Length: 379
Image (cartoon, rainbow, N blue to C red; front, side, top):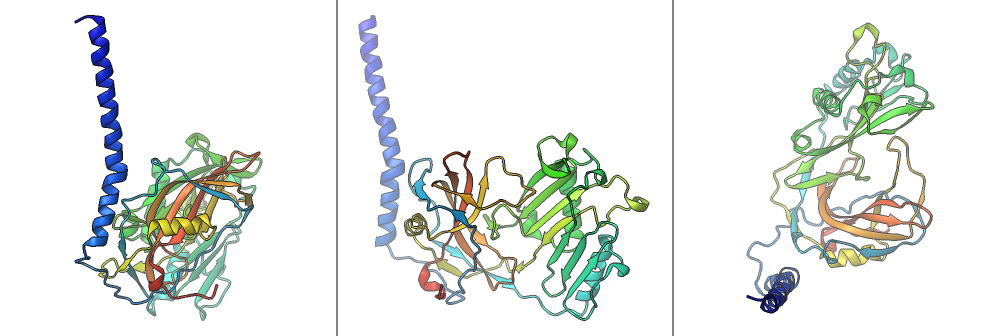
């Protein structure tokens, strides 16, 4: 075979290969999704949604303020909206907290576990919220005996001398925090199957900043997220778990105590018990309708994080000019406050751009259940 014939065969091979690739992508990205959509319209649903809980209460969101009126652009891998999202989803009941005569005793036991004594108590034991203040750390501990909400807040500025450098690893910090949460009854099976994020912090000029090097890390911030079935449960801010704790190890812990008021200097623990067995299914809003609403600025901006962000401080209000949505998924929404039902939402994740900055990440929520099954709200 001479070079001329070889060149002809190569051209033919290239032509047919190119045609096959184009046909394959048209089949996967255009024809099959269109056929599925047509079949879904023609063939009646043999297993319609149960709508077991009737019309559901509307979700209560808190939106992050931004400066500017951004433009939106779909920037997914194929430039299209996802076709694999379900058309219906379960709704789960949240178990309501029952009155318990042991709730007050349990709160006092939790306080003692963290190194707070009876002499640190600054409220009486007649109300539903107990509060302690540590003379040692200057921190406070607050426990709501009805909801099991636990808040701990200790001053961190200028506390570099308290915490050992390089004591923990990601693994040891995660285990110690998980053991603590399990001990006080906050870490259920949904957290066991869930995810977490870990940020390491070190002191520079008495200020806590992020570090990637465990050798100079002094405090770890760990956020825990639950999963239900195959979906993630998110709170008002998707980067902040409803179980959220800082952990360090003290240089001079008194009497070699394992846990003192400075061991977990900051914690926010909110807990709702979810009934994981549900036969309630609801139709979901078409993703194209949700995307159109988001493009019109009707989505809930849940998080805006600039590049190089310090996870140990709150962000200021940020100017956003352009938003590129890279990924769209379904998740469940949980609030720190008590709620009756765990409902699905659409999560739009992407990047934002602003002239003169490096930009950053942005996450936008939108309710996923079709509007006719949600109670109307005035605002």
